[in-house]
Length: 164
Image (cartoon, rainbow, N blue to C red):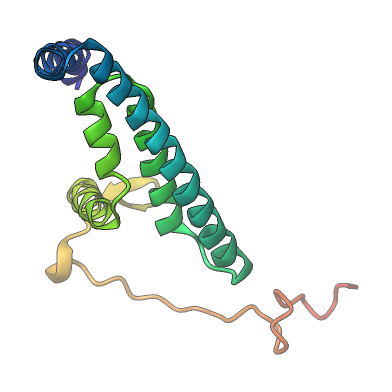
């Protein structure tokens, strides 16, 4: 992970400088600088619009009692998009603008979910000792349960001899 960060901190500025030089050579210095400022302004405008829409969707989810997981992911992507758009450069602007498109965020969410599923582990402890989960053909754990909620669903039962 450390080598990837080092490569990004060195590689991204080098790529941005190379693209600046090429674009500046084709359209000139002032149009290049104007284009950088224009992409920052357009990105800020788009970030504001999509950020407010995402915030409203998250608020509606919370009001309905649902966890706004998709909205939180979209908000994180928009935060990264804003950081990329505020960084001067054409490559970072392109990456930031890509994050404004929901299909791109869908792909990223799928990749993230797949990554989390492959890294996820389930560990079972019995009497303080870790035991193998065994998979679908592993040991069967048999148990009994008792429903401790009151008939009206208000909470756990209390023994009859204790005052409430």
